[in-house]
Length: 216
Ligand SMILES: C[S@@+](CC[C@H](N)C(=O)[O-])C[C@H]1O[C@@H](n2cnc3c(N)ncnc32)[C@H](O)[C@@H]1O
Image (tube, rainbow, N blue to C red):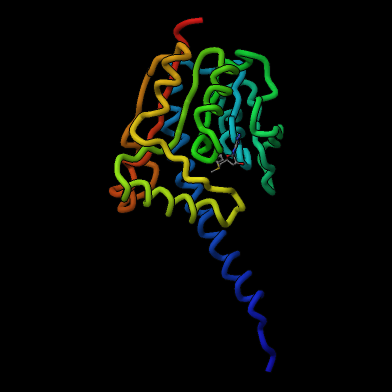
């Protein structure tokens, strides 16, 4: 009788798991895209946009195809397989753009992956001319933080994306935006990013915010 080796079983299970996560992820992304579009609709279309931490470029392609922005530049520290839009790769420190290069910048589920989220936020702000959208997480309690760690692990580990658990407690990143002369235009929180019934436990851990440059 033919024997099936352990690595084959493990790889098959991993492949199945990745396919399930990818299918779930599509619904999650569509919900986030709709929320972003609602925020940006009054100001669309933007001449240029930068997708900070673009991953496989799903959002960059959507923003461009649906006319949110005429030109979207994707940037990341890591290239994923099967990209919709190729990212410009950089070291993770200084973004390879001049000050205020983009009318719109956006960062979807990226800042908590950065070793120093506030330093990365300052870099995004330097390159933003007018508007910034942040989709990320917030927690208040230790169980909230643990839930985010768990969700981040199952959503990212199968794709080789590192998860340093640098989640925002409360709104501690917001003072950095205010100090840089940006004001909060709109905040969606809780944000319904997951389907029911999961969203009942996760929506308070998700937010989407639109910021606008006021000074400078
Ligand atoms: C969870 S994925 C999100 C990808 C994409 N924004 C999306 O929602 O489909 C996090 C992404 O952040 C990227 N990333 C991590 N550190 C980064 C940094 N310092 N600068 C830019 N991107 C970074 C990772 O490589 C990864 O593609």
